[in-house]
Length: 631
Image (cartoon, rainbow, N blue to C red):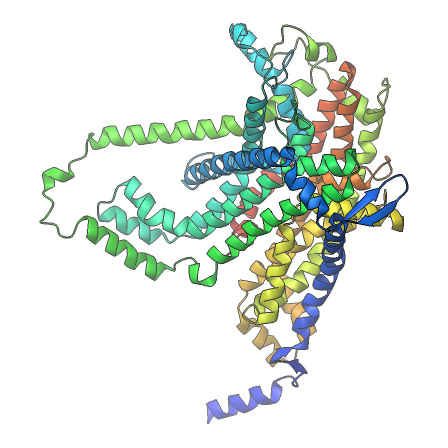
């Protein structure tokens, strides 16, 4: 009787049935509709426009368009410069992917251990990833500078001045140095992905293997690596896309030189489009790059399909049992003498501890030394920055460089006077675009999380994520042409629209992962209490995912703050220029008295990202990233 009465009560209290479309409530379609419509407008239409552009020959003087079909693609494919650029892109990408993946996994294995100062080291590791690529390019350009660079200065200070050289004087070496810079910037992202996956791995798997006598190497290949495989595959694809689309660092460090030694496909497409004004051929090159990026994305979707999903604890335990049985079928087969360790247990433990702390120190120095060098040179007098022979240590410390960029007093540098307003522009644009995209992403994330098994939502989600695999250069060319005709060049609105092409898929994906952690029973309880779907979503579900919303806001703001390509093309005056654009502008003047303000501005540009890395690292690792990389 009690169960019957309760059932009747629930049936009576249940909200009225709403109009459904194919068993899916209309509310679900409304949550994803704004995001999908906007992505069609700001990504789909420009992408089609870029494709149309690649089939035309344009004259920038007469502004005439002539349809030429596939002629642009034929000219591109018949040009040896394209094939050389493709080969450099492949080499650069492989080197960057391998370095990023290997270092990321090693760093994550160290940071997953408990030790004094782990929180500080996690924050330090995040700093290179949080920095703007423009600031990274400025920093490493000065490190490798031939006459007065920091690396040559260090060699002179150590009495090894004979080894000093013009590091960018050799083309092949230049390509490798740019790849190392890319690895330094991207390895922390892989570290965070691996660390989030390691923290989700059940501890009893490792303990069972340890009790069964499996060593650290065996445990890594039999347990840790299989568990990391889905995340490792995803991080590899992300590293591939980032390597293929590398532009900011090349623009700052080498401009494709010396000669064409660092001219990759992204740089070649930029040069054809915006320097030679061959929009058709430039669009063709960038579309070929887009096809390569999408091919990687399709590979990612194929490999990380649900059939390849991460194994649960039970299957992992069963596999562990099988592996260990295969290694040691019975206790009788392997005599005790064969299991004796090569070293005394105390010696082995001491060596392991020593190697671990050497790894900790190496990770700390790898991450912090370049940043410390940037801070040091920003406090150096201008004359110290160009002295020969160079030295790592300044003759004195001064705040003059910061005074020049913050107060614009005593300087004739136009770029230095633009720093304060550019910092404000970056903050305002970052705040607006983050709030808008996270708000839309919150609605879309709910629909994608709750109805991911429905064909429409699954296809829409993958289509949304595919847009993230499109090189920004492919979109910036049609943006430049369209925005110029609409009067959106050099406006906040134009920059916000361009940035949304990057942030909207990111926000939707992160919020989808957050909603997946909310039990459906919570929604049912709210509906039983009489809540409509809207009130249930706003009053019940959104407060629960508030940490995910905050994490998405942080990530979106960081991406917006560091964005350079769209801002460089779409902005033209101090009214809207962001801090990465102003920093890049210093390099065009190339006067020695500009170096001090340049490095001071670079330090100011990395302060917000570094602050986020230090104060939110634990929150980001355990919360946002574990959901953002969820496959």
